[in-house]
Length: 297
Image (cartoon, rainbow, N blue to C red; front, side, top):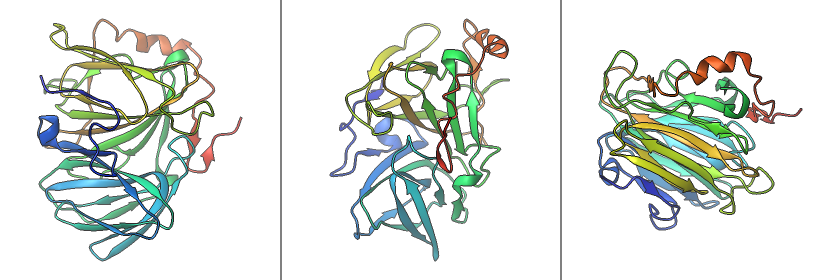
């Protein structure tokens, strides 16, 4: 079995926090880079056979690609705002620059079609409150089918789970082609807020579970800020945010299906929980953010 859990630092590339290729993951499609941009110093990224989103995690940046220029205003932290972003195609030279230090995620997928670059406005990102009770969480569907159709293989979304809540629940999987699911490789990239609920910190932690029905795969790990977990197969969930420490994660999914899809099957032992949500109030801490910033109550 390939390694699944990468604590912060184990996928670093020089000053960059993450360089995760499909070859490192042991699969074929999904990848992730997280870059640090220094103020006033441009960087070039060649996409090769990958399409990607340019997603600010902190700070903003200017994206130059194929003669287009996109100004991404970004955000102070993944816990402060839903951000704008850009789509960049395969076989492209992408220049990134910033007026102040920034951290930029590049969720990516190996693909066949070369599409045009495109800007995604923060105000157009659907923010969904999913679940109920202690399973309430926020999903920013910036790069999912139905919300963003301009991609060949790449799917991505952001989740914020208030401290003490569970997300990615009920446990579900997408590792075979069936009536309810499609095959996808999936990456979880975690950020954990510290005591202020906004600033990422290694002080806090959360929990993540991945398993198969026969328990040949059965992983239960503590995750901290900057960790990566890979889902090659099996049911995954819950992701539980420890009391005091809100949890963010970036989901990156890609697979061989002809049409982009994030379809999944629940673990039949736990799928019944969804029916209980109709009669359970949602946690009023969600949504946490929107395109204007933190949601005030």
